[in-house]
Length: 329
Ligand code: SF4
Ligand code: MG
Image 1: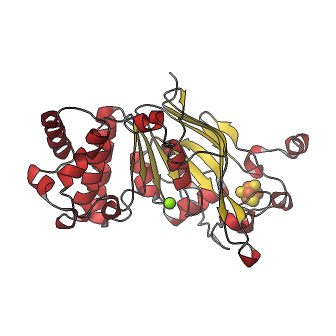
Image 2 (image 1 turned 60 degrees about the vertical axis):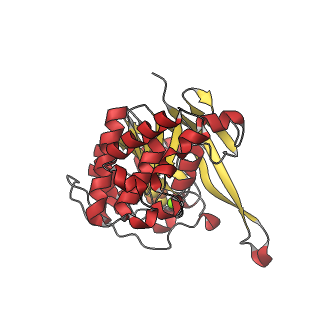
Image 3 (image 1 turned 45 degrees about the horizontal axis):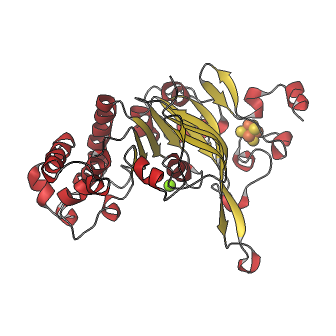
C-alpha cells in the first residue's frame, strides 16, 4: 500500500540575519531528506535542537513548504499554503505542540476550543458538534466539567489532553506531535504518552513523534529517524536502532540515555559544539564531534545508505569500503 505521508528529498533554507554586519545568510534547516509514514505507524524523529526535526514536522503538515523536493499526503501532492485545498487538508493532518498553554486561548472555555476545527471546516450541526466534543473529552480522559473550564483552571497534563482532543476532533489520518510531553512533569508524561499510543492504535493514525527523549520515542514509535543538522543519519525500527545503534551519533545519544534493552557498550561522550545550522561543517556534518572521525570525513559527505532490511545509516565507516567511496567521487 502507498504510504500515508511521503517526503521526497526535501530541503528547507531559512534566511537569517546572522552574517557579518547583519547581512542575511541562508541557513539550511533540512538538507535533502526523504521519509515515509504509513497509516497505523508511528515514526519517531530524534535529534538535538537545531537538527531540523520541527521543520520536518511542519513540512509534513504543509505548514511550511519545502524549497525543493516534494511532500505528498495520501498520494496527492501537498497543496500550497493558504489555498482552499490546503485548508481542507487541515482536517486530515493535525499537529500537537509542546506548549499546550501557548496553543490555547486563555479567554475561551476549552470545550469551545476543541469544537473550533469543526466550526472552521463547517462539520456537523451544533448538536452534532456538541456530541463530538463530548466524545473527544471522554476519549482523552476528560469530563464535561473540564470542558467548561478555562485553560488556566486545568493542569498541564489536562491542557495537553485538550490539545490532543482538538487535534483529533476532525478525525485526521496524520498526527504530528512536536515534543508533546517535554513540558509536562515526568509523572504526567507517561499518561499522555499512553493516551497517544492508545489513540494511535485505535484509530490507525499515522503519527510523527518528534522528541529528544529516547525512552519516550522507544515506547511510542515503530520506526525512528535520527537527525543531525538537517540530515537523517540513521533510520530503522525503533527497537533495532535504539538497542543496537550503528551511527556514531546515535551511539552517543543512546549511550547518554540508554533505553531498556539497549546493548551495553562503552560510553560515548559527545564533545564539541552542539549542532548549529548557521555553521554547518563540511563533509560529514558530525565530524567535529565524532569520536571515530577520519580524515576523509572532513570533506566527503556520507550518503544515507541501506545497511540492512529497513535500516539505513550515513557514515563512511559503516557504508563504504574505500573503493566504493572512490567510485562515488
Ligand atoms: Fe564519524 Fe566519519 Fe562516520 Fe561522520 S562519516 S559519523 S565523521 S566516522
Ligand atoms: Mg523543535
